[in-house]
Length: 76
Length: 360
Image (cartoon, rainbow over all chains, first blue to last red):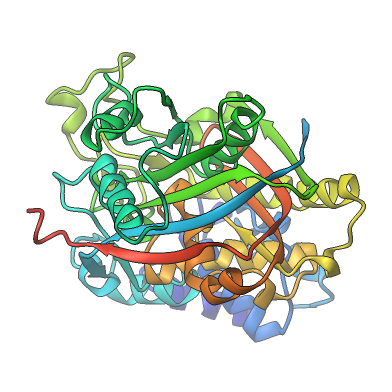
């Protein structure tokens, strides 16, 4: 989980991602940040996230990211 | 809707690009977000440089230049085509049609079927459909399809969502009857209920341009744009493409009774590299069979990206042999469409620059 926090922090260093459960509504991530996040996660965990899974709902919080990655066999 | 055509072929393709090029590094100076964040985006989305027409240069300017080039090279005669179709979302004027303006400027024959089509990212395919249908007429032997846009004029330079990917270009495709069967399979879907996902809100009759519609507003993501500018909901467009395009291509191949392995190249509209890579993964198509280099070299010129992908990547191939191509366009409307056909050997498959400075 710390690794995901680190990735998020690298994309938007100005925010504390451990305190929000809705990164998009809280203005911490936008759609392009989501693309950067997917790109980083794919590199770090050596997976390929399906295009249909690249929706804000799957990247809204640490728990939603954790659930998504579990689908790809990644346990955080 | 499935469509089927026979005994029609593409005879030649020319892409006309404005000579003025701007780099992403220059674009970044206008963005509100940090340079570090923009640079990361550059790598993932494949932004590097794009061709932009100066404000006074229009689609008809580049089309006339391209057609004069074809006439001068002996690749097309001014009196040998019977229809001129222009696909664009950036007409010279609301009235008259841009196709009529091109006819007038080039002193083309009066016995010419001129037609404008307002379509975007799937516009090249829709222009081809219309061309094939016109060729069913006994008096129409050859059609010239102009597909292009100068939409950079309508994108805010402070909009990081849209500005780095936009590009201007005009393509000219000659379509004619074929003596061989040359079966062409295609399909087309539309969903106007999602039209607002890609829209220029002001400037038409619903909301005429005014000082108010020119005011830049922050969309909440540090993108500044006015109602006069193109507005794109990037996440919604991405999801729409990933949802609709792979099944559309499967249905196309199924209707044609062909396998993906039989296709030499999947030449799709190019919004950005990331989106195309995700499509290739979903369709289990090798990435080298789906060119994604138009945006990084020239920008996304809406209906001109498919012919540009052909002239940029397959010029020599298509001038010398036949390729089985799967074309697909998706976006504005929303509209999505695909086509499976054999193309080549072409009489010409070229790119030329439109000299912006000389025409300043």
